[in-house]
Length: 361
Image (cartoon, rainbow, N blue to C red; front, side, top):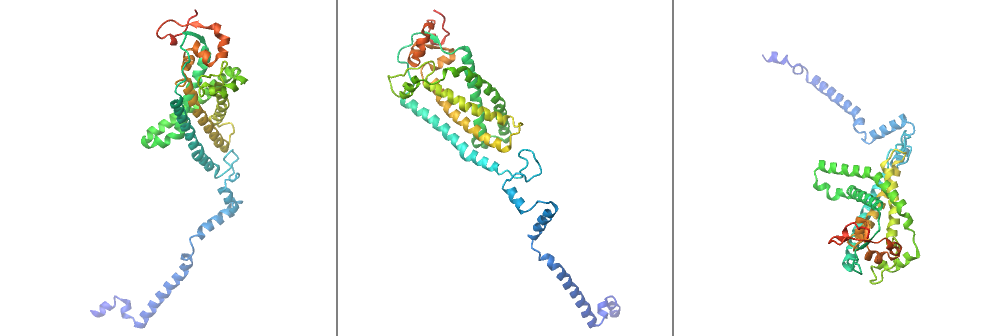
């Protein structure tokens, strides 16, 4: 039985020396395999990307270390495309634009808007509303024609809508996005963007018409210098300066709207129609100019709106009905009133006489 079992194991029937020889051979074979694999295992991982880059440089002529430095530096010509803006693999100007927008334009706009609002509030608390020095007479004179008022309210309405949507695009992400569902936020911003883009060209048309219609009244004269010296009659009580059809403050607002308004309009049209060969860098610079000009104009408009409504008694009536009371005309635009006093009309004797359309006496 034992003999038959030994026959099943070839090593058990062999001489001990043969067993040692077989084991040594296997060990030698293992050592040789390890020696062949060690150079591959010991190869540093970093050499493989180097080989890949070396292979790329050999395959693509011109792909050198200098090329990669140009790519990281935003140098143009790093791609085969010749389309405007597409010949640069990495646009480093985009990061600079982002820094200017987020670190200068956006915070500066908040300071301008907040400073303007606080200044108007402080002015109102110190001086209050500019009242009429004398009671209303009930006789009125036309100051703004129906065309004048139509142009004004057309431009003013579009300006307020554009200002609101523009401020939403610039600031809403800080206080609205965290509290709105993602779908609502996305729809709101898309609507604001489309409204802003489509109403912009319509605003530009109204602005051009307004400038052409009123530019003849806005040349400065010596009378305006005296108006400035007296602070428009607000800072110095009882000494209201003379003024023609428009005073120096109204003229200053007109020229501010003209220059800043045209800046905003031209830059807005460049952004609205990017299919005239504008480069990406041109669009980025234009966007900064557009935002800065619009923020300054919005901040200044707070003062114009205040003076034309709560700041001056009787001022809003002129743009609402087209007519102003004789007492208001004498106080604020005495030189103009002397020219048109023969056009005075008598208002109906009703409790709302100051708000109804006058009839010829």
